[in-house]
Length: 401
Image 1 (cartoon, rainbow, N blue to C red):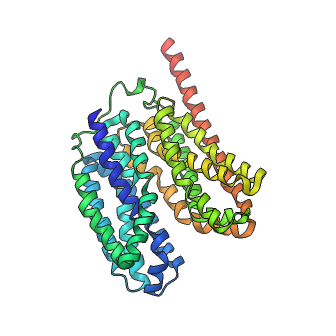
Image 2 (image 1 turned 180 degrees about the vertical axis):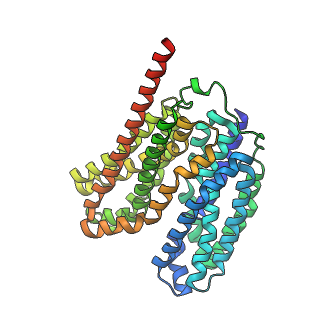
Image 3 (image 1 turned 90 degrees about the horizontal axis):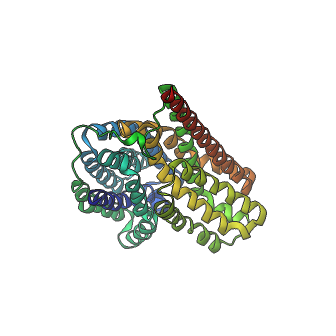
């Protein structure tokens, strides 16, 4: 128990820093970077999309390294690469330099954000990693709460270049030592013999059903990341479209972050003993329910939409870590997780642009697209649950014979 708590705290704090200095950085600094290098903020966000694509490419390789050697060396390396990318960004003088710096950042994101942290937890704790994964997301749920104000303060104090250098220094001074304190992984990845009999253990599916489960999970994760990224980019605009004032739109959109943390607390306190598929299916329905509130109540339903979306998104982040553990077990988790997340990273890179086209054409009606995707994800999870029940029934009949 003490070892899992230590892993949770070390990874949780370091992940907060990693997310704040990468995923949440362009929202504060993109305009200033663009002005200095002679580009638009859209160009800076395009460079950020390149980083997401790079993270998709490097993810399976990083996961395989974690499977073989544990997460400690990979995460230490990611802090060094984060620092190098941020230093390179601070020295950018033209748009090409910005793209090059974000490409380096993408290598760090693919080996140093949630997927790598989850794989590290599973490598250390096997089938018992679910609560550790939840705890990591509880810490990192405050990344925007910490990162946005700190980036804004640094920008006002030392400029955007100084802000990038400061974040690089924090990686070297805080994240790297935290990762160095992680327990060393055993030489061989553990696969507890009792895992199959526990509620969170591997499903024991035959190979063809494992392939189907992989395809369905990849779709669910891609849908979840598309919706999350689209809302992060366009939620204030959507709230304006339903009649909220500018200040109210920003205030309501800001509720998403605390709601995500609340969702993870609900998962930790109440759903931790429930089947992971139940938690995930409930979470996928939160966004469509919020869409219905907006459709029925207009601006009056905006707060309900933001809170429901945040609750669902917070729990789904945990599901991205726990569902592969449920279906495939701890053996080879890192590499498999990397492959499962490739479609999610690709659609995440295009989500702001694609959903922006939908918002420009249909306004708040674009939410029917995101709501439909969430319902499709829920149906996919239902299909997975049905397959697990059918396989359990088949195994019971075989055992009885």
